[in-house]
Length: 287
Picture (tube, rainbow, N blue to C red):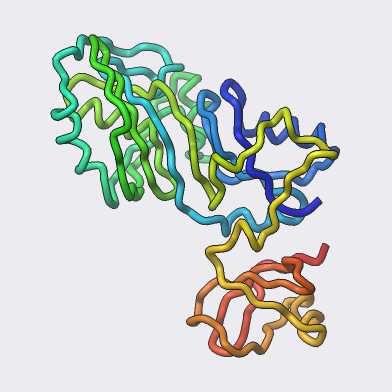
């Protein structure tokens, strides 16, 4: 088994739970995922099978989400599953007031990760340390949010704002909900989250966990999933050098340093880096 699955992760399980279930169903140990989703979140979870796990770092970085922010509440996890920290009425908020705060969250911004996150500090996950009551100082991280669009507004004592967010990797939508609530002076937490795009895969083409089996395995090729890369086909004479990690002399290569997908007989055999007239192997797949 070699390729990618576009999995629609269900709510209530971790990304690793999905991997374990797929390993059991497909009887395959070598499975990985690209981009963790919180247990409450649903949506696109890119899954790599077999040697394709080595290609996960080269997935397209762009992600898109539909998230609902609930105002007037703050929680320990920055989402609705956490313990309540503070509650206050926010019925005075208007959509216009909220929209006025959104532009400051677009572009390259400094974002403080949630205390309950998978980031490692001194070799331990933040969520594990938070569960033990440890307070860990984590510096803000620079993330990029390309666009925020308002999809729905539900007024009330704790208004709900539904947004479509397009962003780069490493962005926490929970942190965005928290920080937007702080900017409005009422607090905020994430009430719902669906990832609709990740790693070049879209929600419309995803498959449920229940539908996946050895008999129904809708694999996508690396060439299709990594379509943002240029691709080059090796000939018989070049294949041996490639498999031994030796640079390949090629014509018509993109600018130096550009990543290039490499195929032989139409099958992905790795990733290289352009270096003038040579293609330097970075990932060599021999299976």
